Length: 250
Image 1: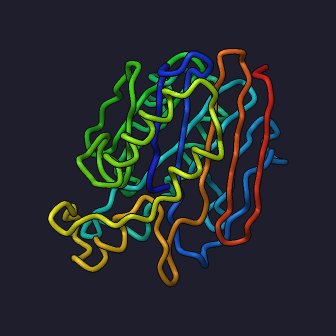
Image 2: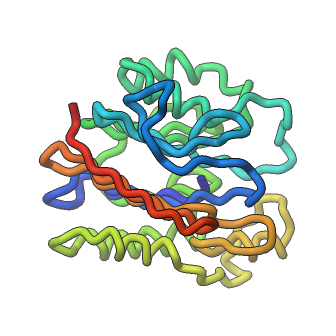
């Protein structure tokens, strides 16, 4: 997952709004979001290579999502799958702080990452780079492959669009997907320097990425509504599959 935009307690009908793009190699095997047979209370996509997920919810109103921290100089191909963290959180009955204490204390076994964790009442952010849990207050947040609200063009562009989006009375998931479909590249002067070289920084700079072999595989829009309903939408950009799931929190 390479871009997550969040509006937390910024709309009268929705406590949490999530817009997210998953960027990945096209060849990596993936299943679209569904209720998991082995964990029937989890609704999420699945990484068929490592078995975890990048974004998901459970029937009790929990939500988790992660992004990788881009630093090729520190990448360990033998590290544990970061997607297992979201799966563990959605299975766990622990509070966000207790979950972080139990499962995330040893960040060295993973390549670096950042997490959003929501329990229906509280939204937390954790980064392995900073190794501290931040309880977020109401606001607009953006996360890509760096720290929360880093000054990246795609993050700034997305946050601005989401800020306008939450001013509307009725939340339209189609308009949310339009935000996520923005392929505008950043100017060179605004590009971050993450160790991948200028050409790749350019290719990775839009909110929606598309180039041979790699790009935005899928997009998600989620509304956690004040009436205790969750609306989960997914668009698979490789297959054209459209997933829609609506349910009431148990």
